[in-house]
Length: 61
Image 1 (cartoon, rainbow, N blue to C red):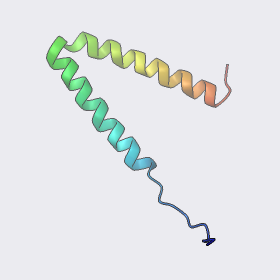
Image 2 (image 1 turned 45 degrees about the vertical axis):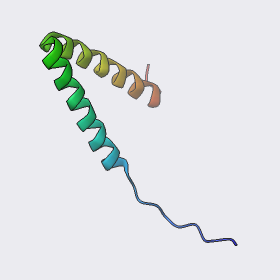
Image 3 (image 1 turned 90 degrees about the horizontal axis):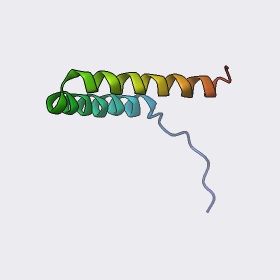
Image 4 (image 1 turned 180 degrees about the vertical axis):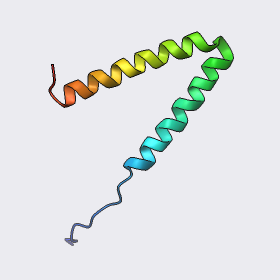
């Protein structure tokens, strides 16, 4: 019953594209409901979080 291990498809680009689409519609929804300032604040917060994850992942101080 043992089957050989086969390589799987790389879904990284697909996942990143869907994350972009989801982030875009959330930004548009926030923009429609409350305007540009909350979108800019959320963008800065997300950017800081991504930078922090990058620093943690690459072990930089």
